[in-house]
Length: 269
Image 1 (spheres, rainbow, N blue to C red):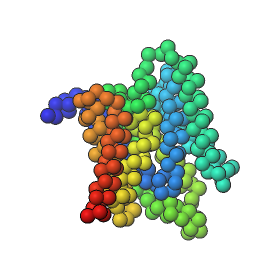
Image 2: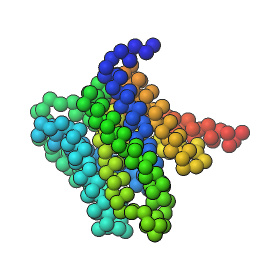
Image 3: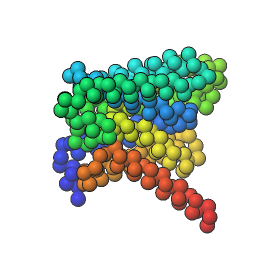
């Protein structure tokens, strides 16, 4: 029944899935409540352009994806200051630039024999020891940052102006948080894929919000929903030979629909 655990790639995929199942909703709940869900989509396209740049240059693709997405995160913060009344414009500009660079570089590198499909949609077979180490180290840093700055992030999420008046360094926290979003997206690419990672940052949060009665409860339930989808999706993708990213996202959606259906049924009883 558990024979898949004898394979090294499945062990790495499950460990990575557990870490990502914590990171994505932990970051995602702040994005959803701040109405910044689109930032994940923007940075994921930039991360894809970093992968393409890694293919062309021969540099470790995830390292290049991390560099590109962090630079894009800084660019979004800069553009948000320039267009303070049109914050979504900054995300649209970065998304367009990232997608354009990705298309150009991928077409240039089309002769290189690399599993681009795995970076696009997730592939459990491609999670190597180096990837696992990067996910574990940076994932721990992200969790530690959120834990240490939880109250500041909470305050900024619900009342940014009030947080500024209270003496919280809003600009610094926002900048660091945006960098953490970029890191989370990059780390999740191997399992969920660049095109679907933003979904794992949003859908489990939507499930958690439906069930929770407080912010902490919503965070915890979002993580639980993401873990159920990630672990189940990785196992299902192994047995059914499907792309792990799509499988995980569909299970996330199915879980959300189940919660909504049960709540609707209970209201009508």
